[in-house]
Length: 334
Image (cartoon, rainbow, N blue to C red; front, side, top):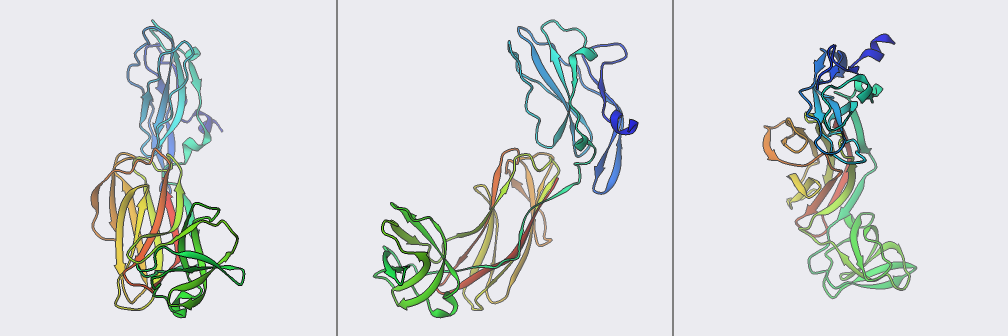
């Protein structure tokens, strides 16, 4: 217990001055215990007109400490802990402070200080297939009718679907002006060249439907990425398995983090198994990227200090092409 209690212990210097001493400790990095020597902060400058609370934090990846300067106020609050860092202590400073003593130091270490670096968090995984089928670009201005209690979608333009492979797959329907909820709906039957029925109970007032056509991205799944889950040297891994209708027609999958398109990958007749890797390079808003073990590409600037959403998308170049997300595994390597 003495070893745990003393790890990264904050204190005044032997002769108090405007720095804080931080004791030695250890981090767990990629399965190895990494010792970290005792350190001291740089000189902390006293506030001018009002009290201020500063924070001393430690980089969870390399064990280097840093000082986060707060804001002067009659009622000061501690500044936020930067992404990739863990708290060591708060320091309460008054105008004219000339030495930081233990009375000004509030220890806020947590047991997680010992092991976040190199930890892996499973963000999402799924092995339940989700298929969608692309309708022709001519299927526009769709209307709604009741077909045995389910919604029939019809248009003056052809949808281009046939029972195989469309029945049992999903189409994406966006609803506007009514109670309809945008999302995936399973195709139950092909009723004519210009109409098909989906698994959605018919009620009055659903609104106006728009079915996502060919050559348009369909978001298959959304995966939230909490703010600060990656350190400045962490990484995000995405392993996915897509399959599709065997044909010479192009099928393209892609992944985005927020509004940033990370990459796209095309396939035709065979299954597509991909491993995407997004690596923070010294900052939580600067990344390198690799696909399927290929060369690293730089220049990305996704800000992982903010909450993000990872989306897996797909599109088909021709109508009646079925694309299936067979499974995926998303991991955050701290």
